[in-house]
Image (cartoon, rainbow, N blue to C red; front, side, top):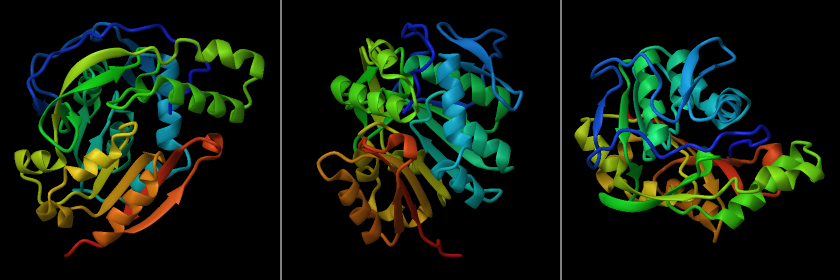
Length: 294
């Protein structure tokens, strides 16, 4: 979940269009000296400059990636040479954190929305030129789907965006963060007003075949209620390649229990946690590990 406690400017849905599953090295193509349309530069707390949609959102995404929680723990478990699939990469901050902390990772980062994808592509090109950006939504099938993009809260965009539920979760998050009640209504107003986009879809197994993956050291999933589709798109023959899954899960209609059971059936040991600021929401961190064959 992104933090809207600072004002953000609405963005236009601008950026490169792509065929289904378009991929390419982040450093490929003609270098650009300016940020993509509807984006802006931002300097991270570590002093490195990135391209983002909103500086306020980028600041919070960085705090989520580097603070206590599943992503930092996952980074600690990575080893040089591991393959990372970053599903729902947004502008690429988690991918950058992984790549900066652990050398020689093979990172494939996937994002469907044109504007955030443009930022992802620019950030990987500038900082992790060996990484690969993929334009698409990971699902249980290849094709196209309707995607709701929130210009003022890009990290909450998704295939199953729910304005009422997203507003409610944000109100709880803000309240838990100590924001005065008088301000919360104004912050949340129009925060989740979405734009409908048609985006390409593909599966994890499509990525495995396309990139000839022999192992997946980490499968990171942050796809706003579509996490079950990501796992449903993994064919039986490809499950043995995966050693670690970290996912944000919206626990609606028993989803957390169902995904935990699925991963346990494939031999994973699963733990579940919830960050204190998210207490009272349906948002949980799922961490699933198992030992891969030598």
